[in-house]
Image 1 (cartoon, rainbow, N blue to C red):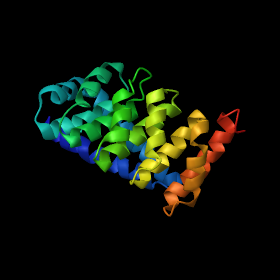
Image 2 (image 1 turned 120 degrees about the vertical axis):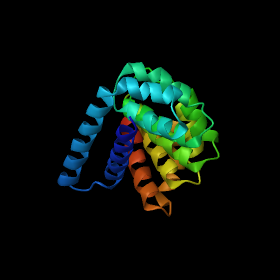
Image 3 (image 1 turned 30 degrees about the vertical axis):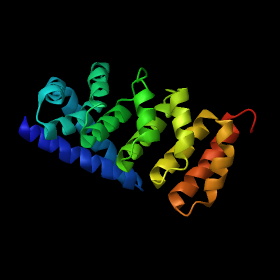
Image 4 (image 1 turned 135 degrees about the vertical axis):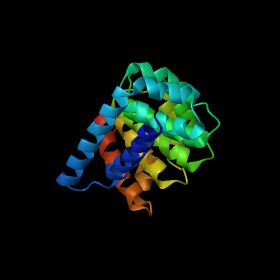
Length: 210
């Protein structure tokens, strides 16, 4: 089990790096092959991962939280939601990653929205923003996520601002138009590009702003 978790941690780290850095067809193909490999391993050892998340040492629980998302199995949703309330920020961060990958339609959004809007840890807010935007892309929407994203447009973390521009564009949030429009001039290119995409999405998804 120890070797399996170590291999899983290394594979997930490599997958995460490729997710953010892939820029060619070859890169995307390698990323997809790696994701398929992780998914197979996670599904084969799902029961072990669930046990580790519930009762294993803390370092192993952190790995299991992310790995369980790759199972895409509804049985892991409840244990992951329980882990969101853990006091260890590393575990919460990997749990948010697990929920992002899981993309389960019954995922409650209140806790994710709370982390996005109020948590003092910028890494957790980043993870919550990424999770929230991914869930919205899968039509998992709520007033809590929309409200949190509006507030987070002014976050000090650029990735949070960028993800929230995309999220609010997807939901067609009229109230966010001025704020997103202003972020087109953000000094961080990632945020500026996301704001442009967000404005385009608002024009597509908001009847009022079209």
